[in-house]
Length: 248
Image (cartoon, rainbow, N blue to C red; front, side, top):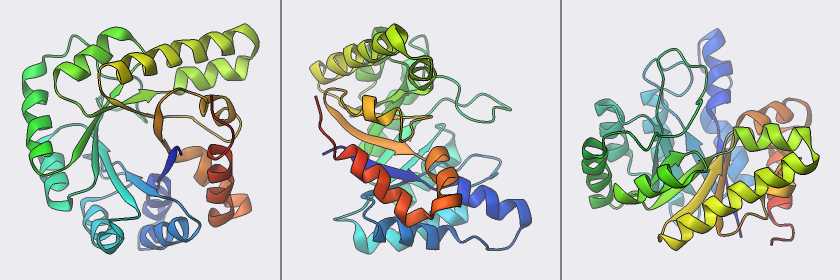
């Protein structure tokens, strides 16, 4: 069964646009869990434009009693304060993501040309505390092998290019799935798990769920956007139903 991790960043974005505590990120998480979501993801950026350090601490406390049934994933760039936050929160998983100054959202995975020394030490430190480490990569051989070299437990495939190709349709969509499938096969062969995220939605997920060895998808923007019209609980259940569909 492919796990769904609901990214609740956009709930915090809406709250922060007005200030105060409404809408409540914790209440949103409660609704997601009640609807059956087996995972929660947050990305506490340095500028705190959505999830804050305080949010992260509060979410960790809320999820602690549910540790056996709900996975907590913190993603972000490996800056010192983020790593300290992760070590204090003790999530199940930390997804290390490259961040470009001024970006609105992630634009690419880690380059295979990135010096491995610093990240290798961070990966080992997190794993020493029992935290699984996933590395955000493009569906290419070089960065996947680089992720293995620095000791990652999993990769997270950057899926915005896939979403764009599926929207185009036809042979382009089939070629996109073949490329991601080859990436998943390689990662699995190297002993790593496979996560995926970025611009996945109810439409393209029908195709992407057939990816071999897919462990988890992290979905935020599309899910929260649809929830504005249909409600958060029902939309979480829609995504769970799609993921429960026939696999390859």
